Image (cartoon, rainbow, N blue to C red; front, side, top):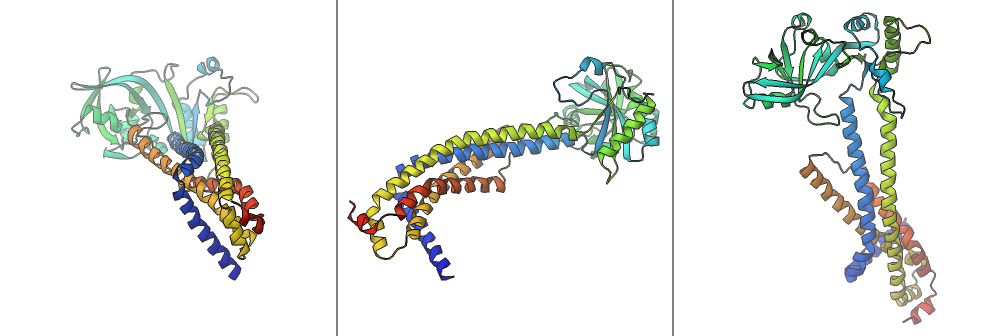
Length: 419
């Protein structure tokens, strides 16, 4: 216990002495820690950006339905051989197939058909919004997507089943057409057809796929079917199936595969003419991408840290030479070799931690600037901060070890005679 207290006191004194040395040689300290600062900035900034980007991407992907299977003719395939001409000729999922899924699926919570028409122009009086997507949906769409209505209501079953001309608007679209509010109950015009607004969806904000809900018009699919042919290759139609609580999406996928093959009368071994997509398909390519970016950040930062480490080592060798006489006096008065070792090792670590602290501070300011000017959420997490300081301390130990050992091995008589 006494020995530990002595070592603690030695570390404390060495830290104080290190800070005094920093103050006494400000220019030398600044130049020697600059490499550490650049290295820590590079590493921690990359880690913060990768973590934030990964979080934003996952949040965006979850809007597609993290617990859902999407029946589509287009697969979410990330391989280099994407046979689009083959997938284009596949039939779209149909209302009859949706009914069979609802009747035969034991593992699904809810299912809906979504038919999407893009690039529509919506009008209300003199206000217009172009490039709008219209989604014709069956009634359980709200159960699959889990969005909130902040004004008005969702469709009734009667409105959905009869295909009445009623719509629910995304927040951004409603704000564009009705800047003064009070959109519910008003009528909008799309391609000379009038639709009565019954509800407004809560604001979702931007994500990887744009404003999925904010600029969307939702209406009963039977209403949309009065104006377009649902099975046309020019329109996008999917069936979205939500997994029951506690059920693996993989099990639901296999169940849906059996139902769809039966509905399309595919023989055993015959190639499927539909795709079953799920958000987990993004996991592998995203993980590989983020891993590559992280490694690149460590490599770039590592070179700067290497240069900074050599700078710190050089400074420590100079410090040992300047204080050789002091080392000899301390040893002659009874200071042990490991005291001298700790003194110089702590000084090297303090130098690196000072550079690391500046680097982390610059990252914090950069994160604030990115959020303020670009409206992109970047978070500097505690683990990343600890990584920065831990890396700085490790470089300090490595850079200061050889100079500290050389100082500890000095002969006291020879050292005292040094000038």
